[in-house]
Image (cartoon, rainbow, N blue to C red):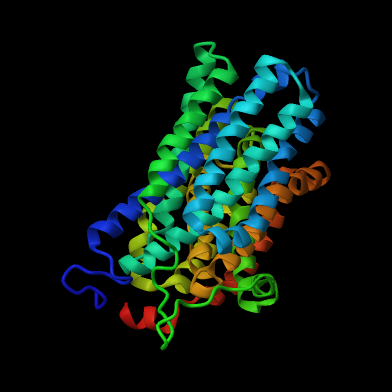
Length: 413
């Protein structure tokens, strides 16, 4: 890379320091996925312990959504005042405390209100940490001079797999949710805290003014103005469409193929496993692909793959073709969210606010998408309802030029 001189990279740090930073981000993404999945995998036990109806369970889970949105919206302002490293550490502690409070509210003294409060805290920790680690990861990419964000998000997926396995083991061994959540909370603070210590400041690439003063920080007003930036909103559209492509599969793929293609329950579960595997593989391979071809061509190709794959799943009731469609769908959905996060952080001055805005728009797909698809699915069937996802993926493909790299990055390719 042109920026390397005597093993000193952009920002004046060594390659070893940059590699340590990268590994710390791996740990943060992985432990976040583990924490979320270990909780979600125990929801049947939660429903039973609190004696909740399905609608009551939906209301309880809404606590994570409320907390996440609050964390996402406040994160850029917190990062501007305290720095990403301090905010990530505080958010991990909040996440761990939320886990323990939730476990106590279910296993100790059953309380819906306390469980809801715990999940709000858990969600706030996740949402705030999400912005911090995506911002720090985007700066790491600039320092190393190569795409890394898809791999960071692949580690989140790996973390969710480990979290689900941990929860399944706890269920099998009859370990209480409180004991599990205490163990996970300790892991979050210890592993996540170690990951934070391995990172560097998100301001490392900012240059001082001619007078030698540090660059000025963005104001509250400037951070809010990113919501009026057409490029940031267009990147949000990319992330919205691709996040919905991912979220729709997470929530509805298994039920759709079982209910409307007539496969067995276990086959439906395996088909979902194929999707997750394809998406994780796409993220791991996406680094080289984006570095070679650039963000925009890759995002367009991903949109095409997702549209073809989802169309096959919707239209063709032949099992092997459905599986091929699921593979294409997973590959197509793999790179939209991480690439959008990288693009949102292109301007160092507004990076935290932009990442926060784009992440918030993306999370709307995870929060509003499932009930929207469920409501439409009641009227026209789940496969028909997935046609809404097709439309948003197509729109995301047309919006992909908004993610174009800055000129200096394109010239160095």
